[in-house]
Image (tube, rainbow, N blue to C red; front, top):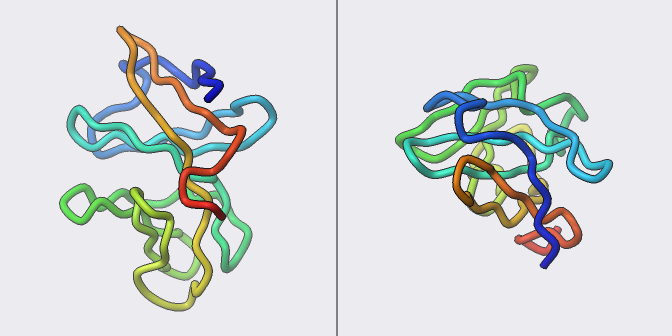
Length: 110
């Protein structure tokens, strides 16, 4: 795995999301407590930025702002309609004050 620094831990508040470019891939970095998730920053239904949507921390999901589709941050799977296709997720880890992401291969095979 080839991890690249995506952002600093302090750049993402709890329950929030930011959009970053990691080696040419638009990635939404989501923070839920002390846990971080990396998911492709494009809804599989409407091709809009997921990073503009809301985060549902208790259910570990992100909502597409346009049509309300929800995606599981762990698997990328849609949890409601209108989306029916998953979005790629990426391996993510924290080292010190840095959030690192590997975009070379999706974590969920999408």
